[in-house]
Length: 331
Ligand SMILES: O=C([C@@H]1CCCNC1)N1CCCCC1
Image 1 (spheres, protein in one colour):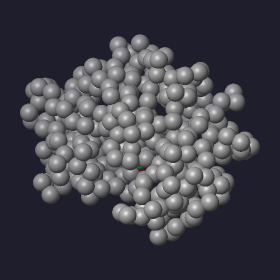
Image 2 (tube, protein in one colour; image 1 turned 90 degrees about the vertical axis):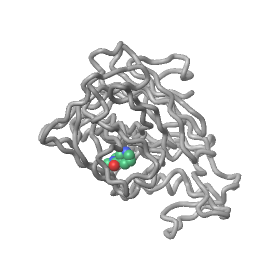
Image 3 (cartoon, helix red, strand yellow; image 1 turned 60 degrees about the vertical axis):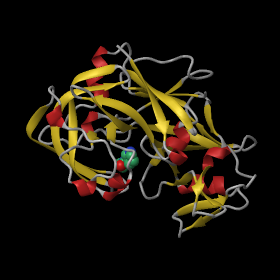
Image 4 (cartoon, helix red, strand yellow; image 1 turned 180 degrees about the vertical axis):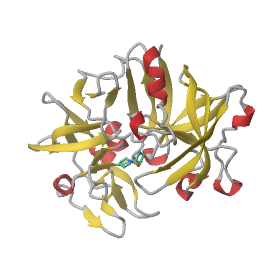
């Protein structure tokens, strides 16, 4: 079996949403595929109205195939301190023509204001490893782990694009979606993340390669590229107008600065992925400002590097849960 679904970026590529069908008759919600967490949770009719702001709500009582898991609950807190919690139902879930008939659907009863404010986002599909699923008393498998045994190949791929729709594929690798070869690196799933080691980086096409092992996770649910301070310094020192602005919470530079270089990160066997300098102008700091917030920022708040959408949209990425590897290719 296999599946394929379009993903669509929101403004500034802050997040990528995909249509997901839940229940019978099907209820379609727009969800955020997040390889940095492992709960499938949705806005639901269990929420107080004050916590809902335009989102589409999953109504388990309107689904003839939903079964409430009595006594089961979930509660998740993300790295940015946003959170959600609620009850658990088993129901059918379809993503891109791939159906899991007995998926744990975590119906929200409470969401934090960050989620309420994001009116286009109806919930998350966590495709990290099930070991960090938050359902109590027994943790639940991710959508991919439930689908995996029936797939042609135990992989899903992420093709995120800058300012354009891309695709998530399940169970196969589309050889027309990338150029050159896919280079695979080992993944350590102990903490439930797609955690891997990059051998180093290069600033600009004429720069030298810095051999320094960078431990980090591939996280489709994080917008920016969060790297060690030493790497950020090496990058921003090459941009004439760049400075660290504590009031903005990070590095900024003049949006039109012509000196913004490309950034390359190593994967394996000498392969590097090139992130165009244009991806590093994340967004204007304030309305009418000429300064842009950088797409690369420090990981010092997190403790390890996060290869978020700014990096992932420069590549075709294979999440191989069969062999616990990540595949990287240019495109
Ligand atoms: O909460 C998160 C992220 C938030 C954005 C969406 N992906 C999950 N974590 C990943 C990094 C380590 C801490 C947990």
